[in-house]
Length: 262
Image 1 (cartoon, rainbow, N blue to C red):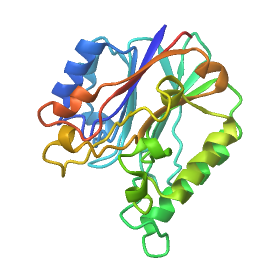
Image 2 (cartoon, rainbow, N blue to C red; image 1 turned 45 degrees about the vertical axis):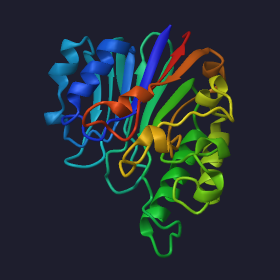
Image 3 (spheres, one colour; image 1 turned 90 degrees about the horizontal axis):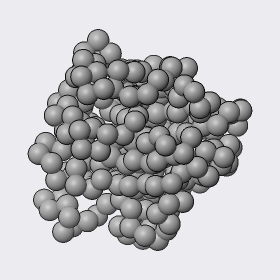
Image 4 (cartoon, rainbow, N blue to C red; image 1 turned 180 degrees about the vertical axis):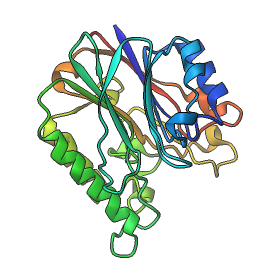
């Protein structure tokens, strides 16, 4: 049994005490982090190693973006795709040694505020990023898991109000359609919804703007763990650790963890 967690940490150096707490309490075998916001040379590698996460694949960038996969079990880095086509550090892929499965950690662009590529280039960049991911997915020929901050809540039940968010970036029809095309290119299974079926509530992000996020509960399911059909069939449990949103100096995202019998 292998447990894989994903968490947009929103600065790993700032929030390393929270990461250490999560790893001590929940001990996933593999942790995929997004928005580490640091170059690899300043990544807290020794702190992770002290907790037993000695296998590390870090694709960092100064001050922005960045992804890292740390593991207690052997992993080998296999790829770093520039799906943004501008050099931003938004992906790292590893092979989980001994089981023949690749694990891809991705941070899809947020896309700005206006869902129109003509007036908001960031939105167009997000859609183009997904198109490049789709081309990659269509050529996958091995068991694969992809996880991270997708910055899209695809289902009506993935947001606090489908009607209110239809024109809000992260839940617009064109984003949902574009993500669905990526999913179909390889036949990825949304493991989170396989194990916590819609319309059950399953959010992973709440805005910092809400003074009381629990009472307000205007959440979105922006973070995902998807897998090839044969790997998804081996998923046995999926949890969203909402309590991390209450921790001091927390990220606006919370960790997800899925167990696979690989």
